Image (tube, rainbow, N blue to C red; front, top):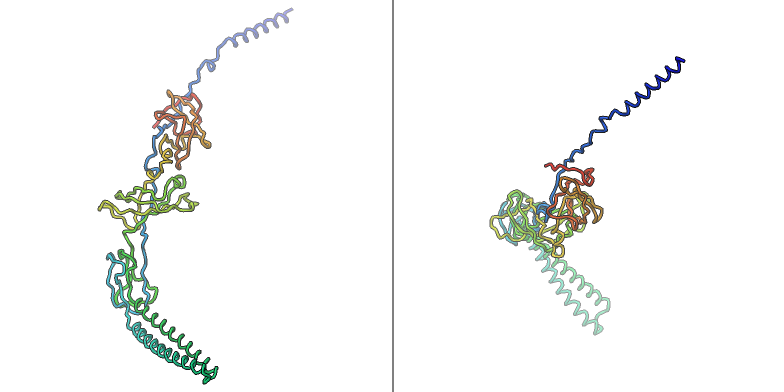
Amino acid sequence: MKKPLTAVVVVAAVVVGCGGASASPSPASATPVVQKPVGVKVVAPAPQLEARVLQATGSVRARQEATLSAEATGPLTRVTVDVGDTVKRGQVLAQVDTTNARLAVSQARASRGAAEAALEGAKLDVERARVLAQSGSLPRASLEKAEVSFRQAQAQAEQAAAALDSAQEAVRDATLTAPFDGVITSRAHNEGDYMSPGTALFGIVNPQSLEVRAPVPEAFVDRVKVGAVVKGSLNPSGAPFEAKVRSLGAVVDPQTRTVEVLAEVLPSQSQGTTLRAGALVELDFSGTLSSSEAGGQAGLFLPSQAVHARGQQGFVWVVQEGKAQRRDVQVERVLPGFVRVVRGLGLDERVVADVSLPLQDGTSLQVVQ
C-alpha cells in the first residue's frame, strides 16, 4: 500500500512543476525589434547638364605646316631668315651655290642650238629629196634615208630642249622659297653647309590656320554637327576662343570609345588670345545640339548609378518623410554616367544616389553627406 502512495506524490510533483514552467513569461519574446535607419546619400534631379559634362580636351595643330628641304646639291651661300621670322609665300629663305648649275644651263643651251641647226639642215634635205623623188631623179631608198635623218634630228632637238629645261630647273631648285605665309619654327643649317636633295633646312607653320583635334565620347558625338560653332578655352590660362566643327571621325577608337572631331579655329576678336600649335584646350559642345535635339539637353538629369534601368523603363528610390519609396520612371541615356528622366519624377524630389543599396518600400533612411 505504501508504494502506490509514493507514486502518486511523485506524479503530482511533476505536474505542478510543469505548470509552473509554462506560466513563466519569456523575456526575449517581450522585447520589440527596432530597425536602424540606412545611411544614404541623395541627389537632386538637375534641370540641365553641367557644361563640363559636354566638354572634351583637345590639342591645337596647324593645318599648314611643313619641313622645307634642299632640292639642289652644293654649299649654302645665303640664309635670309631665322627662327621666329614671319615670311610671305614666295619669299626667298636660302640659296645654294648655283655655279655648276649655271654652267650646265650654258652647255644645255649650246646643245639645243646645235640640235636645232641640225634639224633645220635635215628639214631642207628631206624637202629637196621629195622634189627629186617626184621627178624620178632620186631613188626611193635615198628619199627614205633623208626622212629617217629628219626624224632623228627632230628627236635630238626635243632631247636638247628637255635637257635645257632640266638645267634651268636645277638653277631654280637652288633657291628655297616659302610655300605659304607663316612663321619659321626651326633652322637646321648655316651658310657654308653642304646641301644635297632631301636635307632638311627649315620648319614653317601658318599660325593663322589652326585647328583643334578633340577625342569626343561616342555617346554624344552624334549630337555634334558639322558647321557648328563651339566655344573653347586655352589650358591653363582659360583664354577664350571659338572654333567651327569641320569634320567628324568615321571610326570609334576601340580603346577610348571616342571619335576624333576636327574644328577650325576662328579668327579671334580679342587681341589677348593667342593660340599656338601644340597647346591644350577645352571645347564645350553643350551649344552644338540642333533644335530638334533640344530635348536631349533639357529635362531632369540623374547620375546613372541612381537609376536602375533596362531600356527606357526603370525605377529610383525617392526619400519621402525619411523612408524609401520606389518610383517607376521612364529614362533616356544621353551621356556616359548620366540619364534623362522623361517621366515619373519631380524637380524638387530627392533621390537615393546609389540604387544598388538593399532597400524596400518603407525602409527608414538617414541622409548623410
